[in-house]
Image 1 (cartoon, rainbow, N blue to C red):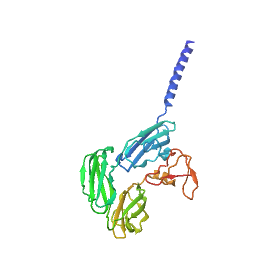
Image 2: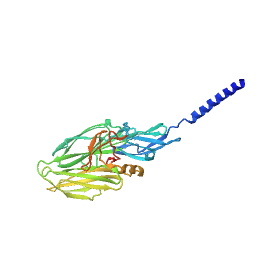
Image 3: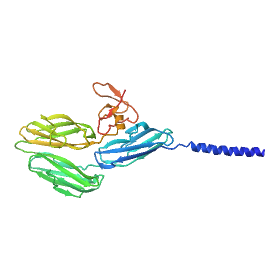
Image 4: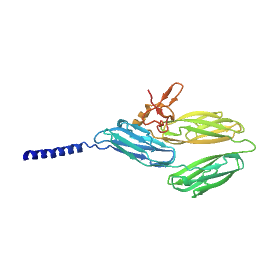
Length: 363
């Protein structure tokens, strides 16, 4: 009996040891993921290239999610096979952002990575009045204390000759300048600090009480930033208070050569930027008495997206900057009936791939 009891005790300890080993070997390992951003700081609009990676030592990734601006809403998601190595995301407003990558493996275990993106706020210059008769006294105001970056100094150029008329280091600005001649006058406001140098402009329209009033114009680019090749639609408008617009010309690459020209006070043109870079499009309008007005806009073109991510986005149908609540319906075009939109991860908003039309696939 003693031998039997000893044998039973041995078997009991043996079974406990084996079960411990089994339990230990059955313990699952969480997945791993990494998230990198380049650049991680800069001024708006800032296009950030995110590099994503995920792996699972004892299984595979079943789902990944990416919240690009840290607002709790998922902007991109998919399976491991759909995980793009790079995502390009635009930050159009200054602020602090905390994008987050979440991965889930086949055992239901979760890992995540979050990083910090610092987008510098644009300095704002206010001017009053924006138009009037010569001589016109204009007062400008600025408060730089609400910027999320340190300011070293600022300068203001009232007459557009490239030479600052005023400069300083104080964060509160209140200055005046009197314009004696009629025409369009641009005020360039440059702020320099740990975000580099950022320039914003304000246009003042000064009229003559007698004689010809120079025309003025507006130029809008849609989209104004994106990934090459970028097709941009230009909306052209000219205004003349005491006559009419005779002609206009548009130089889309700021090389002194007008790619488009025409007559009348409004037009729409399209141009495709094939290469990455920052472009200034210049519009010139001429009135019936030979006076001219000028305006411009900036277009930022970035490098192409990775093939995998681009292919994933090109499988979708075009719908530009479309927002709709889950379960609602919308008319796309005259050729389509209304659709109901409800699929995971995109309940509140269809997130456009950076600077291009927002796309939705439906069958």
